[in-house]
Image 1 (cartoon, rainbow, N blue to C red):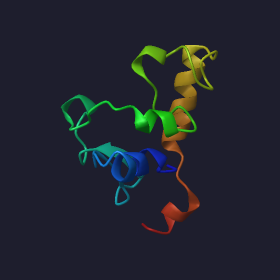
Image 2 (cartoon, rainbow, N blue to C red):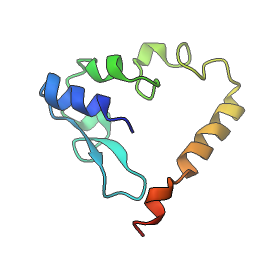
Image 3 (cartoon, rainbow, N blue to C red):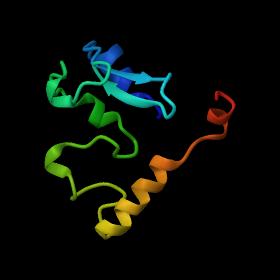
Image 4 (cartoon, rainbow, N blue to C red):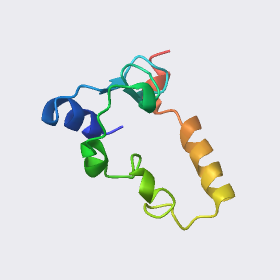
Length: 96
């Protein structure tokens, strides 16, 4: 949750499509407050993708061909994704 994509969308491209839901139990980047990307006001400029340091956002044409986890077998990859989704930072416990 570095927020580079949100800053690129809001302050550089001035599309204001991306935001972070800090009120969620596990904050997430949202398109237009929670719409699916295909239903959002995203203009597909690609700036968010270019500033993402961890490949959380990728061009569709690069899925499965680029990124840190490309060579990992799908079952292992899916297990790793589940671990990350289940992780809760220490500061989040104090919010409850």
